[in-house]
Image (cartoon, rainbow, N blue to C red; front, side, top):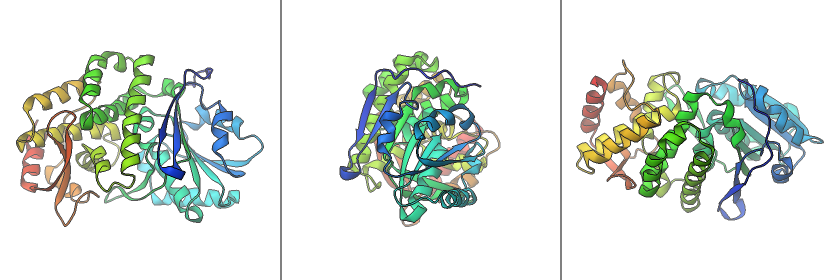
Length: 371
């Protein structure tokens, strides 16, 4: 696909992530990559490394480069996809910073989706024990979730995001123009994270999504901007109250323990992250129902919304329930060798549940795998 012509900045939505001296804005609107007067003010030094991938860079790197005139900058490109979120590529990114001569006031710009954002943030956290970075998400998934909150990470063969750091960006530049070139499957995957925010703690937003599902599936501009802004505002509030996931922020992982296991079992190629989250949310709802925490009507309502948005709700064929359970044991939320999952008591009422019986989880996975 080709990049659309950059539009003039539309009515701008600004959401602040309130973290004291480390607070930062999330700008949502059109034409923002070309609005360098806005985001360049967040750069504090003379060195910039733009980390992107071979799919996004041909579309949008030049637009960002025009805003870097007069600075010493370079780009570092990865192949596209979750499979490239590795330590080897982090090492290559750090070598690119070294070649640039990046000093402690340098900045890494993440131009791409969640993989690029996670890796750019982790490289920035490591270089000289921490330099600035700016998120420029180009996927819906990254705009509504991974670009906000400062989580960075790298995958290992044993599991997803097992290594990482909390490192907040200086700004998030969510240019809606970039969604015009986003493949339909990746767009739908981003909608899963929108649903997740509503399912966790905002039943009114969930009902809004049900009413606007057709508009969102069709990429209606007004509905999309509203959905992004509401999801980002919700996450920004949670991050401000619990930056390093000591309590409330863990709720944002609804569906992720199941979803990460599914992604890892599929070698990061069978499911996109948002697809894994969609299936994971359906499984979490099913387990909540099995444990007597929620009603079957809530599970059905979630499944209907996900399917209306074109998202999967079933475990892919051929995945082994025993392997999925083993992968779930590696989840970062677990404590003292027991499963600690995010479940719910119905739409908008998620909670952390410790000591979940593995037998219940395995029974659920076996039932779901049989269809």
